[in-house]
Image 1 (cartoon, rainbow, N blue to C red):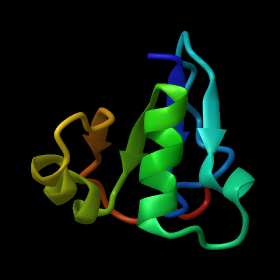
Image 2: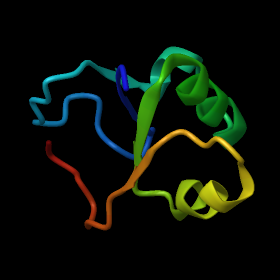
Image 3: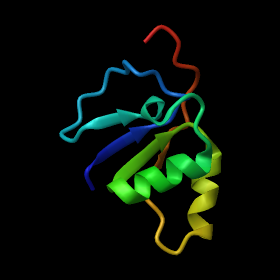
Length: 79
């Protein structure tokens, strides 16, 4: 694992201090597709962190999926 890839539904400036780097999906352009995010995470050894259930559901469809952290929290405005 090389770090975390935060989905667009999480703020860029979230208050989280991990021991590994955080990359925000905004580096992939404006509103990247789930497939693009998935591939980028696999190719770069990143853990996808998202509030989106689609990534959790997709784990069962890929033989070698990236790791996914599915956050089940409310809106994160004001962070």
